[in-house]
Amino acid sequence: MSDLLTHEEYKAIAADLSVPVNAFINGRFTAPRSGNTMDSFNPATGALLGKVAACDSADVDDAVTKAREAFDRGEWSRRHPSERKHVMIQLGKLIKRHRHELAVMESLESGKPIRECALTDIPETVHCLHWHAEATDKLYDQVSPSGDDALGLVIREPAGVVACVLPWNFPLMMLAWKIGPALSAGNSVIVKPAEQTSMTALRVAELASEAGLPDGVLNILPGEGPDVGEPLGRHDDVQVVSFTGSTEIGRRFLEYSAQSNLKRVVLECGGKNPAVVLSDAANLDHAAKQITYAALWNMGQNCTANSRVIVHKNVRDELVDKIREQMRSWKTGDPLDPTNHLGAIVSKEQYDKILSYIETGRNEGAKVLEGGAALEAGGGLFIEPTLFDRVTPEMTIAKEEIFGPVFAIIEVTSDAHALAVANDTCYGLQASLFTSNVTKAHRFARALQAGTVSVNCYSEGDASTPFGGYKLSGFGGRDNSLQAHDQYCETKTIWLDLSDDAIDDVIAPDSAS
Image (cartoon, rainbow, N blue to C red; front, side):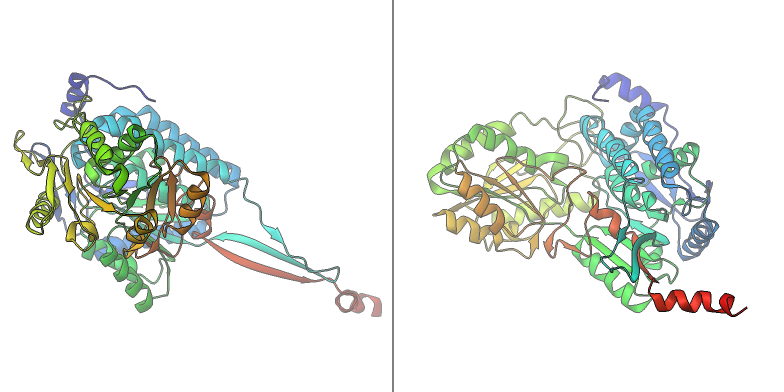
């Protein structure tokens, strides 16, 4: 699956692409009741890709009704786990078979470079679905230590109707992160993709139906947040909402839950992640490569982007020179050209926001070492990868999540100072730590306030490790790993009385006769 096509081959696929635009409800594409649509643009060219369904609360009601009916019928919720596993594996195989189409569709709609879509997003999507599929018939229930007079069974049951609200930065991967464990557990699922990136989710739902998923089990509702996300958050027949996005919107989902049926809410809400380079970090070439990747991957539109490089003064100059050298190999341009590492910013709104942060950094006294400007490229939304120096912890670009190809050097005078600066944030999603001392590696990794800490590398872990954050970065659960299955299940205790009195009560009527 690591094969890349040529630029010309990707352009040919794009020219012949049939993009899905209608909602997917109860196993078929369905126009929204209102007839309203949203324009989906290619951020690299400004070209209109299609008019996508703009669903609203009426469509939400339809989808929830069909999802609940499917759940109650039991075609999926009560299907044998090994059979659910088979369908999910088949879905992964179909995604792999259509990988070039899906990679081009995601690149066109999001501006992501095709090499990332083809080499990372699609393979990881397939792997995630297969990983959770394989867990389906391997998760055991429990028997409590209840003694000889009772039997306590602790069993897992699917929660019911699950709503998954996705971000625009990783449309396919985040879809898999959420529907993988939710479907594995036997739930019916309704997905609200980001309004900027709806098409791949719609195509995957079509493939899921082809794989054998029963009608109503996976539904996709494109639309704006107030029209689809909020009605899902307030719906009394939705049992779980899993949301990835901004902290501001995450807070609203907690409010919607409190104002409706107290549905479970799982939030992953971004971060302001540090790369901490201690005084004894030795392999600075490796550190610079990892830090640059961590900051610029997906144009920095990544909730774990290492946008704060907190570096000890003794190694600062050498590290900065190596980072600048690394940045020059990150070529920006047409996302469908596989030689480009950086593509277009997803929307004009995000593009303007990033440029505003760059201007704020300059105004507050930070120095631009690399980049710092928009790029003129065929009418698209391109920004140079940007590195700031002379940044202090109180500056806006050191405190707020930029979500763009912008990162900052923050110099510290001691390793203890580095740790204090790293933890001085309202977020706590990911941190990278670079050191040559094994004791420091353990002690600092434990002291960093983040859900994932990678040592001498940048990483989010893999499908087997829980992903989520501390503080304002997360709430209510984790994506990935077996822990992700827990949030989509209810836990039930069944208590059986096996005492002599219970036996006597049961057999006494027969004895009397």
